[in-house]
Amino acid sequence: METMIAAPVSLTQGAVEEVKRLMNEIDFDKRNVLRVGVKGGGCSGMTYVLGFDIPTEKDDHFEINAIPCVMDRSHGIYLMGMEVDWQGGLNSRGFTFKNPNASNTCGCGTSFAV
Image (cartoon, rainbow, N blue to C red; front, side):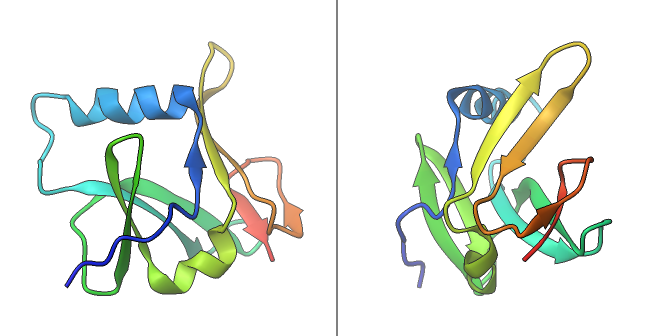
């Protein structure tokens, strides 16, 4: 049974627009939802995960601006309050992460320590 929780992370307007653009691509698999998470690795110890995936029974479900999202229940401690942004400039292009739980981040912007 899927239980909806309050969104543990937020997306800026730019991130919402980019995610919706990707979801509207012709070959997008409609079974997928936006997965937010972490995994071990990266120069500071942990790396952010942001991509499309099929939900599992270990996931918490939430919505951000009508975007269906999931996160492994055990990742909430690392991600609570994080903001995801989209940078579309010529010099820096991609999603960025502002995490109030990170004790240390590195220059790449996708790796952190807690």
